[in-house]
Each structure stands twice: as C-alpha cells, then as structure tokens.
Image (cartoon, rainbow, N blue to C red; front, side, top):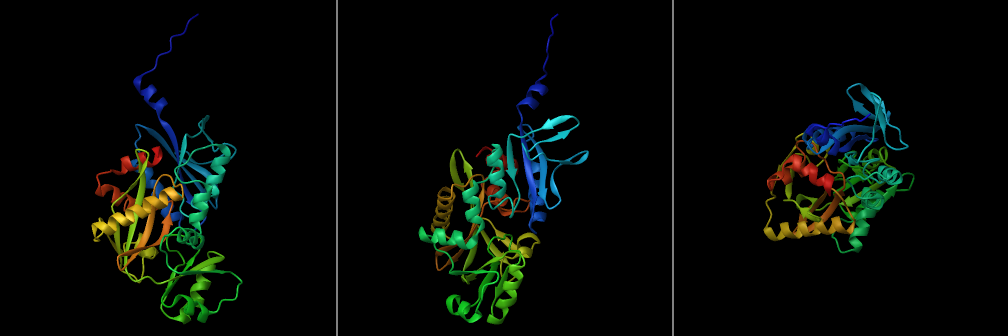
Length: 335
C-alpha cells in the first residue's frame, strides 16, 4: 500500500514561519507600557515570516494569551498546549520593561533552556539595570556622566552632605527602576527626604544625580546588516520639570526628530551610542539618553528594552530614515 502526500503552497509557507513569543508584563509599574509595546509588535510583525504569540510574565503567573483565554506556560521548556498542539518557539521578543525583562533575570532563564531572545545577555542587562553601577563603569571608560551618589535603604542619609557633594537641583531615582517611576526633581534640600522615601518604596537602592543644564536628546541604535546603526536623534521638550512618566507616556512633552542640534554633535552622540552598544554587547535595539551641556554630551541612561508603542521614540526615529514598523521588528528579530 502506498500513500501520496500532497502539500499546498500555503502549507509550505506556514511550515517555514518562525514562531515568536512576544513577552510582556513584568513585576513593576512599567507593565502597562510593556503591554502597549507588545501590542505594537503583534500588530505590525511580518506575518508572512513569523507566527507571533503573546506570552505574559507577571504577578499572576506565566501564561499565553490565546483565543480560548490564558493558558499556563510550562517553564521546563517555555511551551504550552492549545487544542492538543504543543506550542514551542524559535525566539523570544522581549518586551518586558524593568523586572524581570530588563535586568538579566529572564535572559538567564532563556539561556538555561537554550532559547534565543532579542536583547543583550545576562551581564549586559544586569549592568544597565543598575544606573549607578552603569555610570561608574562608563565613566571609567571615558564617558561623561552626571555626578551621583548611591543610597541604600536603612543607611544614614545626611541631606547637607548630599547638597554639598552634588549641589541643587538633584534628581532622586530608584537605582533599578525605569520609565521615571518614583523619580523626583528636588530644587530645595527639604524635598530630598520625601523623594528618597518615595524612591525607596520601589527600590531599596536609590541613585541621587546632579542636575545637568542643557538640551535633552535620545539616541536609538539597532542592528542592520551585522553592524550597529545609530538612528536619527530625538530632542525632548518636556512640559514638566523633567521627562517624567507623564511626559513620556501621557503626551506631556514634545519630541522632535531629527533633533535641532548640529551635525557634529549628532555624529558625536551617534558614535557614542554605537560605542555603548558594542562595549556592552547589546542586541536588538537600545536607546541612550543624553543631556548636551555646552556642546558636550553627558550620558544619562541606557535603555535596553526601550518603549516600543505606536508613539514611542525608536519607531519615530526609524520612520525618519524610511524604516517601517514591520521592517524595524524584522531587524530586531534578525539581529
């Protein structure tokens, strides 16, 4: 007895697609931004090349969003069952901002089970998650950064010593936080204690940074043809006293791409950003924030899972040089 197996072109096309987990959620207040970023990926991913599934890691558990509702993920191999079929993945598009997606924890898990992902590895992610340690590392390698102090919960903090060391204003931030959550600008010394309390409610380590008067810009970097590509700069004009959560995600800012700075400054910042990308062994996309003080760029922060919603900065910068959202997602997945 013989059997004739027939395959249509559609069967072959579907079989060649890579299955992608779009990982969202997280354990911080950035989870709402993470879901917006994941939605953008799901809406614009090239479905001729990829079969995407949204998978959520949050305080409720680890589960995939399916038409039948949430389905628990087996962490032994990052799989789940849908209508009798075991769903496994070729790659993970990490869209968790903050813990555990941006500090190396989820990357360590994927390394253990041998599943590739779109960000840098454990070392790069853990180093960039801690603002104070990253700035110390980059300062040693010649990058300009704001002066800063690290304060741990339970330590004795003397406001006068902070002001003597850093001056005023200062910025008080959770050392391992993101999206400017629990971040305060202190123009007076009597504001520092409450700002520390606010930040420590989110993170037992708090960084206090000196104020840098200047122009705020941000620089995206992606990988294209095996090389880091610096995107056009974006200038940030916040309606508030700094680029806080409201300014970033609720429209209280103006973002100008390309930034209104000279070609020399643009090139210098782009070179610094690609240098950071290579030095830290980053992958996928990153965004590096700067303050330009008297024509000198000071590095403020490195975002290794930058915001990626419809209105986020990286898609804006890519669009400025003709890269669509669909092509941008493909570049990140193939980097």
